[in-house]
Amino acid sequence: MTRRGRAAATGPAPTERLRVDPVACAGVAICARVASDLVDLDRWGFPVLASGALGAREREAARRAVAACPRRALWLDVADVDDR
Image 1 (cartoon, one colour):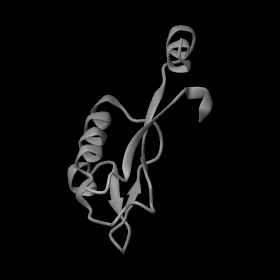
Image 2 (cartoon, one colour):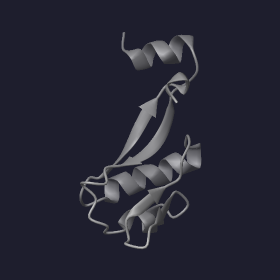
Image 3 (cartoon, rainbow, N blue to C red):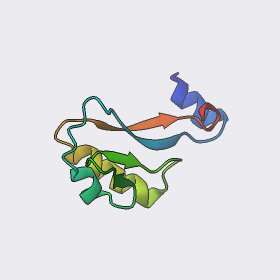
């Protein structure tokens, strides 16, 4: 059984957070257009992400941002609540 499976079966549900790889990011800013509630841009056009676990509506916006990123610099990080 995977770690994720054990956590779901015995403990708190895993949480998802939007993450960015600053080295891979080219500052295209599509993520900010697709998920404006989650992504702000710094003065150079690079993403500044909202912190904390995502709610259901935010997860959908985050998935759209991940799919839209031309550099594949965004991903959803799944962590157990205890891993915060």
